[in-house]
Image (cartoon, rainbow, N blue to C red; front, side, top):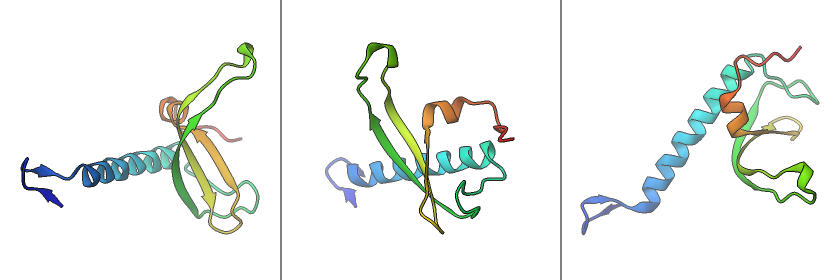
Length: 99
């Protein structure tokens, strides 16, 4: 929806486009990081990608805390969820050796 008063795009549509772009970036990073990605439980090669926000509070100071985005890979066959912290995945040398 175009906002006639400002000549710009509705904030909701803009946010949706930014979210879509972020998901595409995350999917590309996963593909580059894990070119032979398979489900750890059933071996399937088909996944859903879900981006989520993590707000963790450490119970002990020695554990630290993390606030940020996560990339969840959900197996389309068995539903197993594999979670990666986006900042670490994004910045890791690729491909990530899984052997």
